[in-house]
Image 1: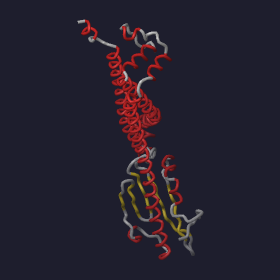
Image 2 (image 1 turned 90 degrees about the vertical axis):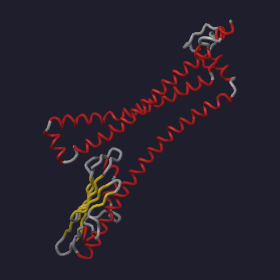
Image 3 (image 1 turned 45 degrees about the horizontal axis):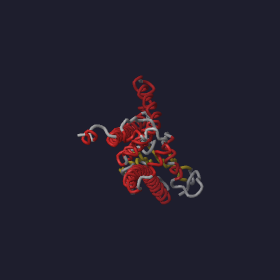
Length: 303
C-alpha cells in the first residue's frame, strides 16, 4: 500500500514532464501566431501595393486629391505600409520565441529529473518530496555539474531533432527569399531583352527606310503577355506593364520606349526611355535607361 501511494500523484518526474508539455503548448501557440501573422502580412503587403498602384495613375491621383474617402484610404495605405517593417520584425521574434520554448520542452521531456533539478535550483519550483528535498538547496553550479553527468546518448536525439527543425525553418525561409530575388532578376532581364529587341528592330528598319515602323512593319507582335509583364507596341511606342508586384514595386507599373526622328536633311533616330515614378521600381530597373545603347549614351542615337 505504501509503494502504491508513492507512485500516485505528481512526482518530480511527472511534474517536469507536465511543465515541459505546457511549455511546448505555448511554443506551438507562438509558432501558430507566427504562421498566421506571416499569411496576414503577405495579404496586407499585396493589398498595400495594389492600393498604391491604384493611386499612382491619373485617375487615382485625381480621386485622392478631390474625394475625402480616397484621401482617407490613401493615408491609411501609407500608414499600413509604414507598419509592415515592424510586422516583419515581429515575425522573427515570434519564431525565435517558439523555437526557444520548444527546445526547452524537448529537454524537459527527454531529461525530466535534471529539468526539475534546474527548476528547483532556479527557485521556479518548490518540492517537498524526499526525492528532491536534498537538492532543493543546491546551487546552480551543483545542478549544472549533475546535468553534465548525463550520458551524451540521451542528449543526442533531442538535440538532433531541434537542430533539424531550426535548420529546416531557416532553409525554407532562405529558399523562399532566394526564389523571390531570382524571380525579380529574371523579370527585369526579360524586360530589358524585350525593350532591346524593339530598339534593335526599329534601328534596323530606320536604317533601311529612313522612317519609323509600327508593329507590322517591324514584324513584331503588338501585344505579348508573359508571367511578369504585358508588352504592347502601339505605333512607334513600346510599353511594358507589370502583372505582379516586385519587392516594393507595385503591380501595374509601366516602362516605355518612345522612338522619334530628328533632323531635316539628315534624319536621325532618337529613343526616350521612361521609367515609373515609383522610386522602388526605378531602383530595380536602373539598367532600363541604358537598354539599346552602345557604350556611352549619345543623343540623338544613330542606327
